[in-house]
Length: 362
Ligand code: GDP
Image (cartoon, rainbow, N blue to C red; front, side, top):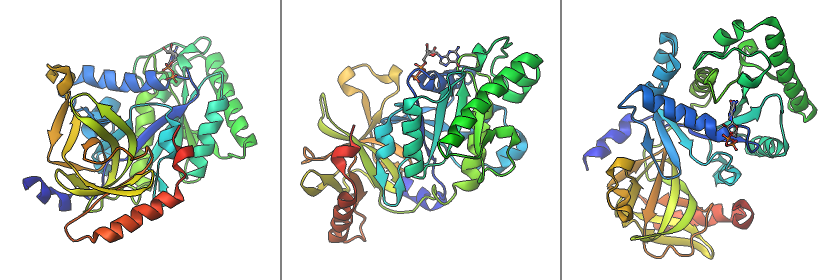
């Protein structure tokens, strides 16, 4: 297969990003804004739909952020794989060996409301799973006296506000920072006042309505991921590792597995081992499906494209026999030509024992 040659060239994969926060604080609007603005600005934006996620290519993001040349030179990650269901705490609970499936999170908090119950739930999960994150202090356009400036960098817009409005925003930010301190989460600071991002957690003011601060949020996110997450997003040349997001009956296809692949590659016809209710299930891939572009769908029962090979990080729908007992949250591994299947079964069995599927699944 021609595509195989490319594997050795890939050293770093796209980080898997999730957006969390309390209901109505603006998660969906924020994601839609980024997607919508990028699509509007560039015809061939290259954003691709995955199963359960969207892929944003790096050049497109950098253009949207008007990223400085110095940052462009540093970035080697191919793009961002952003989980489509914002606030999906079940997704956060999906585990891979030694960590969470999400590499990085954006925690959205509405200003001046501040953190609410679900915010704290998300914070605890992030802390437990050791997932690094940044905070988007959202809805700054609603602050008294705020003069909006579409898509502006946060500092650019902030510097144009009057003294009263600036003080008001800072007051709201420090109230939130204080609440985090009380929850034993010290060291949160406005991003521009941070020297060392390993010691402080960044808060970036945003508006998902006017776009202010959104380029800033992405630049801070890219900087952190590129600099500190290299190890986490290393691509290992080999058979895929993933987790099952959902087990679903699909019209025209039967039972399917919606999976997030976080390492390696997966091929059509390949043998896989996946976690089931009663232990590991060994099967083989009949088809690897990804969503078709909306304008390509003529027949609604044919809404997927077939793929020969899929590289991490990716969201993919797997068609395979005998998967009825597979459970959401279960680990998945592909069996390579040099692998001993018994070893893989053993790994999956061990992984299944370390996760409590019934509580992990919302
Ligand atoms: P989610 O539940 O966190 O996904 O929140 P939504 O994205 O659905 O947003 C909830 C409401 O807040 C919607 O009416 C949005 O239009 C509005 N909203 C979201 N972000 C902003 C923002 O930055 N500024 C303003 N003014 N409204 C916002």
